[in-house]
Image 1 (cartoon, rainbow, N blue to C red):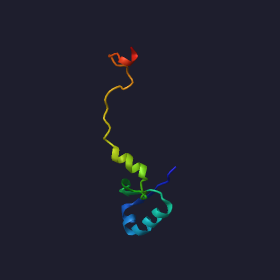
Image 2: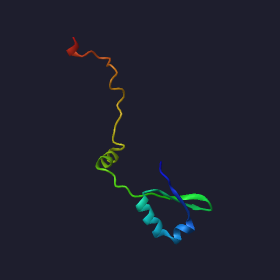
Image 3: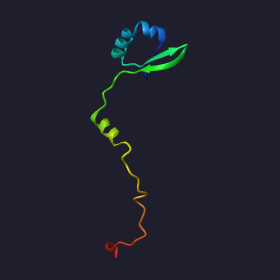
Image 4: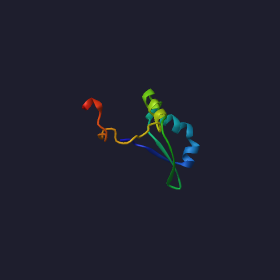
Length: 80
């Protein structure tokens, strides 16, 4: 379970560097509010692995050609 810290926009502005240090140390998200409503979320940076980068680069490149398992209406010569 991820425990996130909640801080007002004015508190964040006054102590931004301290909040960034805390974020680096705890690796927990920080929610910034304005008038009690969340307006931004600061999360620790995480370097993506090589496999994640490869998968992201392939996104949208797959083409769907229908059901490839369904039998064809044609009879194959090999089956004769």
